[in-house]
Image (cartoon, rainbow, N blue to C red):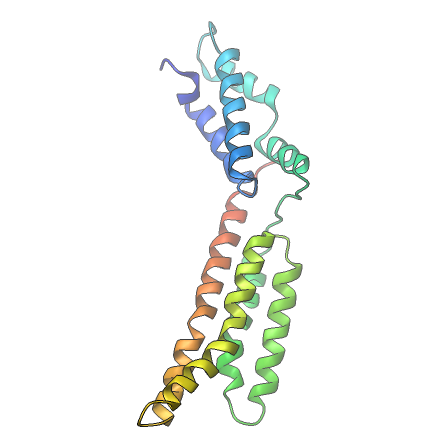
Length: 199
């Protein structure tokens, strides 16, 4: 193995830093990783490339979490904090079920609205998602409120008018963005949990 950066311990270290700095601007992240690679290559030049030497150089750099946290702090960001899978699932279930629940007669609209509000508050306050992810999720979660009436109006303009079938179709089509938002947030939360680096 000629290049120290190809050593499995180095690759694992750099991969962990890359995961922990996923929210940095791409250019800053590339620069950080390039600096780390260069430092490792220089430090391991003319040194036997064994595990002990590699561990010693990596220890001088600091743990991946320390490096990632310092880089995020320089950019004015706080490190994402993972939350339990259960809480994430509850939040996303409320977001997805808000519209279908609101279609239930009598209590449905109140329960659907309550579910949407709780989900929105949970997403907004969570530290596991970036501002960008929260904005995208908000747009996708709110879009059924605009899409369902718009699609219903389009069906109403057809010669057949707005039938119960076309109304259900409008609800189904308008509902599609909510599961997409939940899926994106779920994947982002999983990445944060994976990137929860050892201290």
